[in-house]
Length: 124
Image (tube, rainbow, N blue to C red; front, side):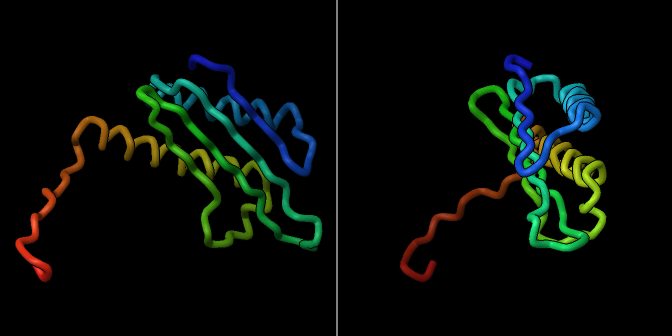
């Protein structure tokens, strides 16, 4: 990686074990692709007005060569297991790995793209 990893905790204090888990996940991602130039991870604590089961929000931004980016945010479906920080981090990095794999396939041309159809008139 060309730049240092940015890890930000919002609404909470990040423990050293949390940082180590995030760094280990980033190393694993970089091992799959090897050309990640920068990475930023933002972990948002659950809002205090929730009593129980509020999920952590984990956002991952990966910078790739040629100005390309892969952004992974929280899924819209609520999963009560994401109230556990380590589970939320693992799920976010799994989504990041899938998004990175999809992006790499598109870059290599492995994904079939359909040609754009030219319309001959207002209704096609």
